[in-house]
Length: 507
Image 1 (tube, helix red, strand yellow):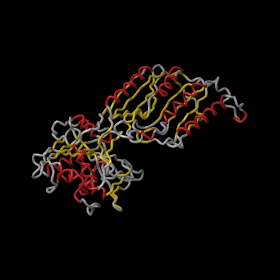
Image 2 (cartoon, rainbow, N blue to C red):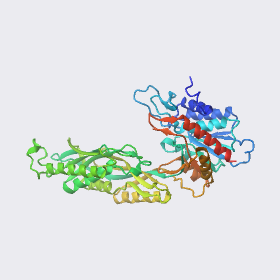
Image 3 (tube, rainbow, N blue to C red):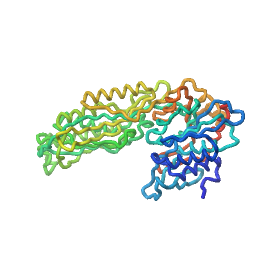
Image 4 (spheres, one colour):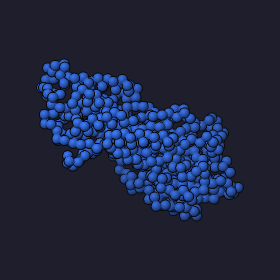
């Protein structure tokens, strides 16, 4: 039974509902790709389906537009497939269960995939139409955008002749996206040596927790606490006052997420902590090692909470006794790791001079991890994995080179993966000017011209297609990539009308 058949624009929501009935999580795009190929064949439209599952569908211009410059309609066909713990849907094999309440579309217990299913629905509705005026169209459907823009990176763009691109992968109506950062994942790996732990030493787990975190692109400007960097500051203070060695370190889960938690096991020498196991800590003299240690942790809690009062009010540093590990890093390796963690660049590096409030270059230490050797005759590794972003390609390269220098100084290496180009702001953009004019006519106000400190596929296409004039836009969606994701019906209708008027004017 159709849930969306009664709402306008009917053909858009018809195709959106069909898309939602097909599993299309990132990495599982065979079915949706085959669906698009079958659509092209059924409508007798030329198409290309590549080995990555990208699909391009071509449609001639309508009457009066036959010789107009071709236009690319572009969106991605994969979605972030997430569900609630008690949801019975298998995201690899089942379709979504849609809900429509008070003009808002969502899915029961799962993500909706409005990002970027609505772009696919818009394109299919236009390709299916017989009465919508438009230039020659090249509808480009890419895969695996959500896991690194892999489809766009793999796509052969030589069959595409368009240099005008409408990307429908934005979630805020009234915003025209015209620039984005390029990025890469940088992994600095520092070799560390291990030795047997002194049985008379004492081990404590040092933890930083309850930082607010956030997306390293769109939320890095908040300058909130990075739990791994805070951990480094406390370790540096401990190393100044105590004879310590480290066991494993860990922090964060994704390179593009600001870490909320980080921890390590700190081993204190028996000389420093000779009275740490005194049964009644109340009887320990105020100048004892244990009292000094607790004072230091208390002091750093106050320092960090003061610095991050407005962004991370609940951040907490704790130290608790744990069992001694069998092995620890050597003294030299311990201090090398602490030095790297202290000096590792992080956060906003430069703001844009062209667009007010835009972060131009940044770095996020997202994952701190330790790989211990199978035996102590070989080195282990401490890995510092980061998301590096900049809307200026040379600045991204400079930041990566600084990480390489840091790694070299510490006897380590840098590996760079997932490198994608920036989409640099165009001073002259006829498409942007046209879209601003049409927006003012339709809405009676100016749109917001926006640049993102995050990656979008437009940057990849712009790097492959010199002279590409591109704008990204879309209807209102909330809580994308979560099970609370929703899409506003009226916003879809207005954005549809806006899109049709743009195509009409591109004669």
